[in-house]
Image 1 (cartoon, one colour):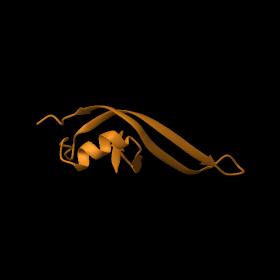
Image 2 (cartoon, rainbow, N blue to C red):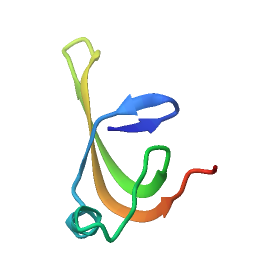
Image 3 (cartoon, helix red, strand yellow):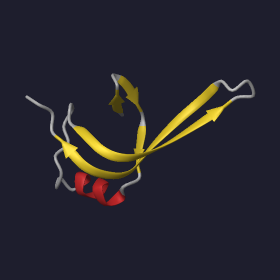
Amino acid sequence: EFRHADKPIPAKIADLEWLQKLQKGEISFRSGDALRAMVETETKYGSDREVLATHYKILKVHELIPRKE
């Protein structure tokens, strides 16, 4: 789960190379850190054009931005 404009965003990470480095401990990602990334947004609408669901996928992580202490 990530945050954007103080809103929680559940997002899947599709950047497998970055994810493997994170899982191996080669990347330290802590609460409050930020990512600069390419994100795909898919929005599903109902018959009255109301938003039914929005899904986010992180396609490519470009940079990890550590939180400011």
